[in-house]
Image (spheres, one colour):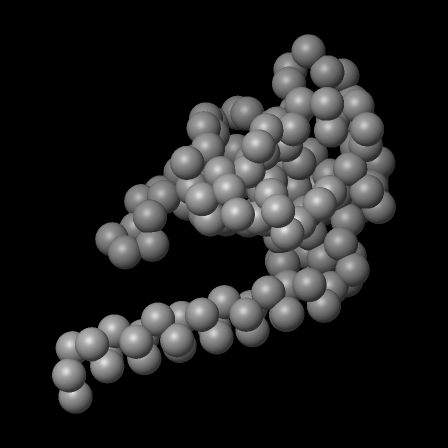
Length: 138
């Protein structure tokens, strides 16, 4: 098999995998809460990931998400999006920082949508070269 053909197949399989993951992730009803960055890790091929914790109904849940080009330091807080029925399906939204000056308590069962007072601090998305800004609205 030629190198060009292998490259095209790898790109195609990767794209299809991404589509399947997005359909799977989007199939869950989402809730939102505040999560805290607990660390970062660098993978050989996967780039930098952010580890985070959040609480749902009093239970501590740990998660990990791709960091991209955002700044995320241990102890910083951001909005976390997670599945209502499956909390292990979660991602930290690094474009929604929760500043220390904002005193907000997340409900024990999370928010159905991101509160307006947090939306004021929203950063422009930088992943996917900013293309998601055109297709996804909050």
